[in-house]
Amino acid sequence: MTTQQQTSYQLPELPYNFGALVPVISAEIMELHYLKHHKGYVTNLNAALEKYHEAESKNDMAAMVALQSAIKFNGGGHINHSIFWTILAPISQGVHEGPQGHLAKMIERDFSSFDLFKEKLSALSIGVQGSGWGWLGYNKNLKRLELASCSNQDPLSSQGLIPVLGIDVWEHAYYLQYKNVRADYVKAIWQIFNWRHIEERFAKACL
Ligand code: MN3
Image 1: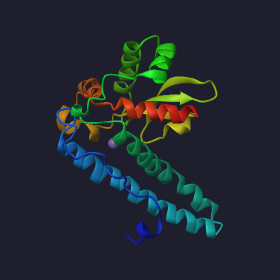
Image 2 (image 1 turned 30 degrees about the vertical axis):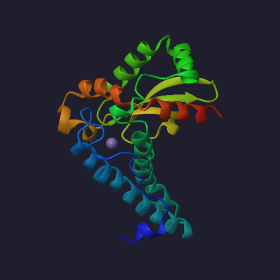
Image 3 (image 1 turned 90 degrees about the horizontal axis):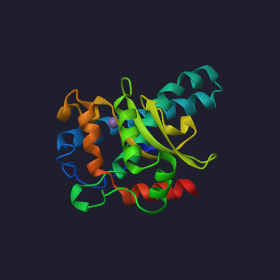
Image 4 (image 1 turned 135 degrees about the vertical axis):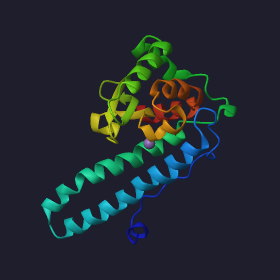
């Protein structure tokens, strides 16, 4: 992997250890998810970007276009997972009571209540066909919160929204613990959302 030294994208540090999200997410899932899946996206992104820069230097537009799906997939995977790790926190940290302040007010304004928001985002995430993500995003033009689902690793920016909170519903995120019952995983993940960090992400999105 000679490409890795020359490129800038790196696996970000996990803000807690692999077992920190037990019982909601097992240590085995965390280790595989972070060290195999996320690391794979970073490695493949750097390799694709290096090929892209090479093609660009040769003005090889056909090669540049051909590389774009690999950049979207692996770049999206890197973006999405870099967000995902930070919006979760161990149950012992006690930041899971739900949003406060501006985010709480905006959720109430745009979804009527926190419970309705939770219900809608859960249903949307459970309903993603195949692999993908459910998101709470901020629509900067309309100044409102919106829910959206994305296929594969498409980043939420491809729908014109700033990601605030995302639920990874790829099977690799839950299958070892929840088997095929995605709904149980989505229900459980609400216990480990780091609302203080999610509020910070929302505040930045509003700037
Ligand atoms: Mn994943």
